[in-house]
Image 1 (cartoon, rainbow, N blue to C red):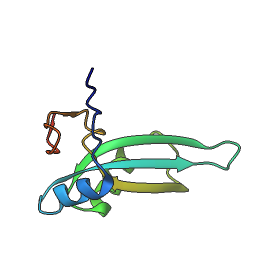
Image 2 (cartoon, rainbow, N blue to C red):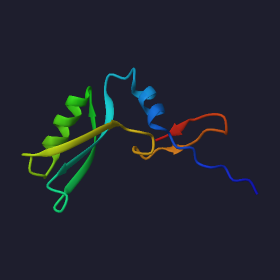
Image 3 (tube, rainbow, N blue to C red):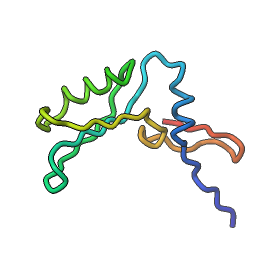
Length: 95
């Protein structure tokens, strides 16, 4: 019985993939409230920059925009629903 684990794309690999793309896909996490009343929302957005990703997510959120903490990173293959299609030595993902 052979079992091939499903390789996950690391954040470093995602950063390298998106490096030369003009438009990138970002995962944006927005949080508001204190530690007791914290609310959060996450979005996948397409933008040219971190600032553009933050702006887009703020336009889409239902959180009060007064005091919102923003965490942004480039999307990995897993974030986009892609599955591994490579053969052992390859790191190919299909979406």
